[in-house]
Image (cartoon, rainbow, N blue to C red; front, side):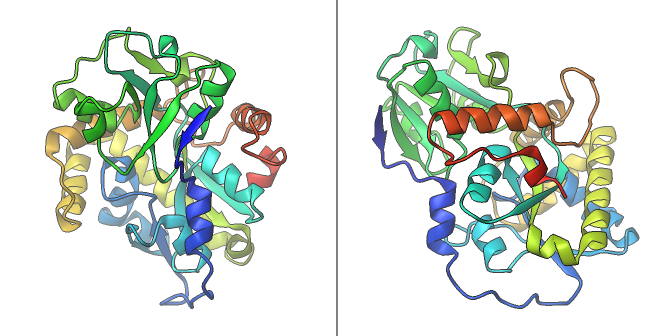
Length: 318
């Protein structure tokens, strides 16, 4: 397999997270840093703050988004935030690197990753194709799949947009069904059942976003962590019941953070994120990490040498 300068999230975190730990700005405050810029992917947390759910739970929460030079995990390592969102595969890499983490709330119950090909062809037929992948990680599962399926993809990293793919420089690209997928649709790219490969439909349904703290912090702030998680869950449940008002709240955050997007894109994202929170089997929002999905992710990543050892469900639980 050919790799084109793949930067894993873990490597970036290790490079940026070597400073001394800094004191929390205010004792008892949880600084929460989502893993990306302001968008509907984090709507439940915005709702929890805007509707006073954190305040009612007796926990002071400050939401601070990451920057290009200060990714979320780097902030967590340096004690500049106390909680962050991570995909399960990312969290497992970080635990494997010797940083114990605790999952205090799981929001994603289904995998959102897709591969979109530039032509009306099944991505699994594009042997040796040039395929876009995020430079800051998120593609662990795709690399595992490509090795297992003997696809010999040449991975081409991109930062945060679909320009390389839209310009015709790539044969295919990874995308999230709630984000880049809709960027492609808005850019006029034709997507069909034939040229879109959905990982969740092919034996790779691994959960993604959850809220994590370092075990060190959790050990001394268990009650605070529990109240934060419960209020965050309440925010997501309210968002599912009030999508229109939730979208208004999301757009306030987007405007405040000067994020280049639009209401239509954020509405589509919110709808898809909420859909992915419903477990396929129980048909409910369970807000829990599934042991079977942890086992699947760990096995795939160990098999493809992305983990040096198995990371267990028990390691990630409080």
